Structures are given as structure tokens and as C-alpha cells.
Amino acid sequence: MPDRFAGRLTALEMFGNYAYTGIWLLIGVGFVLVTFWFASLIRPQRPNPTKLENYECGEMPLSASYLQFNVKYYIFALIFVIFDVEVVFLFPWAVVYNSLGLFALIEMLVFLLILIFGLAYAWKKGALQWV
Amino acid sequence: MYMAIFILFAIMSIAGAIMVITLKSPVSSAIALIFVLCCIAGLFALMGALFMAALQVIVYAGAIMVLFLFIIMLLNLKDEILGEDEKKVTRVFGSILGIAFLLEIGFFVRRALTVGSESLMYPVPEQFASIEVISTGLFTKFLFAFEITSVLLLVAIIGAIMLSKGEGKTEY
Amino acid sequence: MDLIDIGITVGKVVIIFGALMGMVAYMTLFERRVIAFIQGRIGPNRVGFQGLLQPIADAVKLLFKEDVTPAGANKFLFAIAPMLSFIPTLLTIAVIPVAESSTIFGREVDWIISDINIGILFVLAVTAMEVYGIIIGGWASNSKYPLLGALRASAQMISYEVSLGLALVGLLMVTGTFSMTEIVAQQSSFLQWNIFKQPLGFLLFIIGAFAEVNRIPFDLPEAEAELVGGYNTEFSSMKFAMYFMGEYAAMISISAIMVTLYFGGWQGPILPSPIWFLLKVGAFLFTFVWVRGTLPRFRYDQLMRFGWLVLLPLALFNIFITGVIMVL
Image 1 (tube, rainbow over the protein chains, first blue to last red):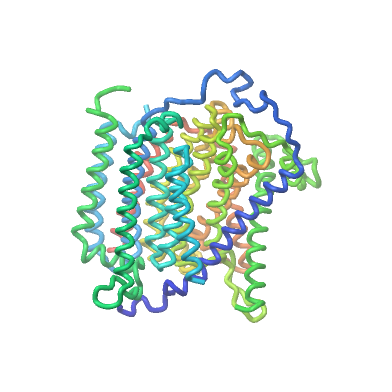
Image 2: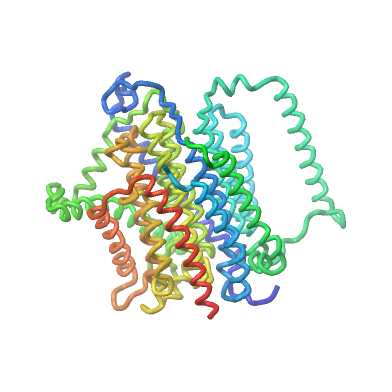
């Protein structure tokens, strides 16, 4: 390996810092659990059928909570997955952009133009319009 | 310490994977799957492949699982409907496939542990899977593959729109 | 690693966690007072001096409330959903440097929980997890309003996540590193702040940030006129409090991220570094409240169109412009 990466922490040296992330996560989980546990000790617990009904502005619930929702949500999720992958490709490109220069710009322009074509297609087909 | 954390992540991901196939409600299964994916990201991080770990969470756990959850909610599968589908044939076939897969893993683990030229165990190179190595490789050596990926993504966009919209003229 | 090191680490974690919780608590009061001021009211000023004990009173009230789980709800998912929304937000705080490193008992102490060199990726990965607390909460309630709110929230969050990520790509091109500490170090003087290198990128980022934390003008998930309370309608007691804390903690963490990435982090003249950091974060928190007191809510179709057809192309344009300028 060339030594232009010298001075950066290697993966194993970084390990300690990830351990701190794990500790922080455990503290967060612990905090939530302790609060929930403490609240369950002191709060009242008197359920009755009316109280356990779903909230529908004071009316009796009319039907099951089944909702036939718009297929648009699904299309947006699909397009999101694709663009998320695109963003993920852009990250490694962006960090080394300075050392790669003009050539990298052209490479990425080709990549982006193809995807912008996809975005334009989605736009034209009306997939990005809510109504 | 390193080994202990590896075992912890391994056990958590296997336990999560068992939950994915045993839980009744599809949404609970999906949550278990998200958990498994996060544990696998932890394993990646443990190997020093930090970029891969982040991608695992961003793309798989963060994007694809949202799509899964949307589909589950869109179909709103009830437990009863799912129960009916579970026929004996599926179970037998599934078991056979599962055992075959286990044997395959066992074979490769055995091969990896054998010492010599047959071994699949290599020492992890310095800077293994670091961002600099990945991006330098991606934009020089594997440039063509990278550009082709954009075409693949374009096809995915068009396919998604065609599937969900038909000819694009139908109003709904 | 000896006792002093462990002590310092514990102290650091306790201080940062305590400061965050305190800010979450007082953010609620701050928001109510500022909104009241904007609308020509007084706001809560009865409990303690100028209402300073109000957050404590609220917390005690929520602790004593009965915890109602609707009959049709999925009990387990209903219980863990508030946690899923709070924990990821908390995790983002771990990679933000909050102050200059100082020397305590002869040890160098970096005021950051975990100084990892993929800080920005970590933030993005964890932010991607935030959406599940909302989807699961809405679904597990087995009720109409929460389900609608959850769907809206998740569709909105994923739409703006793309622009948020693309805005960061522009920043990464300038900085060339994922590490938060290095990014702060690069912005050592006022004119080197990344806001001057990435003005359009910052604008995109702050708009995306408002949408990510579901604040006005993007607070569609909890549009009270249409959806009652949105995804948290059926939640009560500590579960509701956890959602609430998650929302405020998300505001604080995204403000801290903006300060770190674009406004030089904890750096500033004369005053000590934690004060500078808090001042900058406070300015952003005020902006959040100010915008809430000023702007109306988007309509849902406007929101989605804005995200995909304005923000996304602008973000791509920003990357292009940054690339061209850097080559020239």
C-alpha cells in the first residue's frame, strides 16, 4: 500500500471508538427501559373496554383499521431505493474527488446524466406527481 | 474481547434470522430482518470494512426494508391468510433446501480451515475495504462496471414505473 | 486504560447525556415561550420563576399518566416503537464533537463520544433508521389515523433523505473526509466555514433537515387538523413522552450536525468552546421555533413535488457546480 494513507487510524485502532458507540447505545436503551419501568411502578392501571377502543374523535370505531392506501407510496419507496443506491455511489466519489480531478468529474457526469434521464422519465410518466 | 463481540453479533444475527421465519406477523418478521441486517453491519464493522457496514445499514436496513414494510402494509396480509398458505409440500421442500444450504456452508467452513494451498483463509490486507481503496478502485480499475451500474439503475427506475403504472395513461 | 481513563469516559458520557436531556426538557419550554411571544401571548410562566419548572412538572405529569394500549394493538411492537424512534436520534449525538479537547488529570480528553472516521456515514445510516419508530408505531396501533400519519411520515422522510444525502455529497467533495473532527479542524477561521463553500448545499441541507424532523412547514405526519395526532395518536404516558423527546432530541442533533458541518463546530473567539457550540446550536433551535411561528403547512402533494422535482435536481446541480469550480 502507498503511504498516502499514513497517519490515518487503521481499522483496528478505530475499534475502541466503536466500543464507545456501543456503550452510548447501551446507556440510551438503559435510560429508556429504566424510565418505562419506573413509570410502570407509580402510574395507575385501570383499563376498561371503552378506554381501550381506538380513537376516532369520540365516535365508535366504524370499521376495522384496514386501509386501502394509495399505490403511490409504493412507487415512491421504489424510486427512493434507486436514488439511495445512487447517493451511496456518490459518497466514495466525493471523498476522493480532490485527488482524481477532471476525469472523475466526467465519469460522474456520465453516471448522473443516465440517472437524470431516469428522473425525467419518472417525471414525464407522472410517477412523481401526487395527484 | 474481539472474539467475544464477534460471537455476540453472530448469535444475535442467527437468533434474529430464526425470528424472521418463526414470527407470525409479517411486520414483526420485517423488524427482525432489520435487526439481522444491523447485526451483519456490526460484523462488517468488526472486520474493519466500515464503509460496507454503513452501506449495509443505509441501503438494506434503511431503504429496502422500508419498501418491504410498505408492501406488507399495502397488502395488509392477515395471519389467517398466511396460515392457509403453509402447505406440507412447502415445509418438506423448504427443509430439504435448508439442509442443503447448511451442508454447503459446512463444506466451505471445512475448506477454509484446512491449511495449505486449498485454504480459503487469507490474511486481511492493510486498509481492507477502506473508503479510499474502494473509491480509487471503483473510479479507475472498475470504471466500466461502475458506469454500467447507472444503466442498471435506469432500467430499475423504468421497470418500477412501468410495473406500477402500466402504460402510464391509466388514471387511478 | 486505567481508573482515571474510565472515570473520564464515564464523566464525559454523563455530561453529554445530561446536557442533551436538559436541552430536550428546556427546549419544550423555550418553544412554547417563543411561540407565545410571536403570537402576542405570554406562554407558561406560572410554575417556578418565569415557568422554569414547567418541564419538570410536565415530566412528572406524564410519569403518573395511565398507559393505555388499544385492544387491537400489537402489544410488543406498540411497546418498542417509541424506543425505536428515540434511540437512533440519541446515537447521532455520539459522533458530534461538542468542545475543544482539553487536558484533565494530565490526560488528553476529546469531547466527543466516539471519534470514528466515517462520522457522516454513521449519521446518515442512523438517520435512515429513524423512520421505523414512526412506521411501526403507526402500524402497531391498529388504528386509522396513526396508520395514515405513519405512511405520510415515512414517505416524506424517505423523499427528503435523498436530498439530504446529495447535499452532503457536495460538502464531502470540499472536505474530502467523513470524519466530523477533521471537518471541524478544517474550518479553523470564520472565512473557512463550509457555509461559504457550500451555500446552496447548506440551503438544501436545512430544508431537508426540517423535513427529516417533521417540523413545520413539513409537519404533515402530525397535521392535527386532518390526522388528530398522526402516528402518536394512540400513545399515552411515557410512550408518548418518548416520542416527544425523540422529536426534540432530533431537532437538537440535526442542529448540532449543521453547526459541525457548516458553521465551524465549537470554534469561536474569546468564549470557551462549549459555550460557542451551545450558542450556535441555540441559534438553529430558535430558527426551528421561529419558522414554526411564521410559516403555514405544506399540502401533501406540494410537499412531495417539492422534494422530488425541486430539491433533488437542485442537489444534483449543486454537485455539478461544486465539481466544476473545484476543477477550475
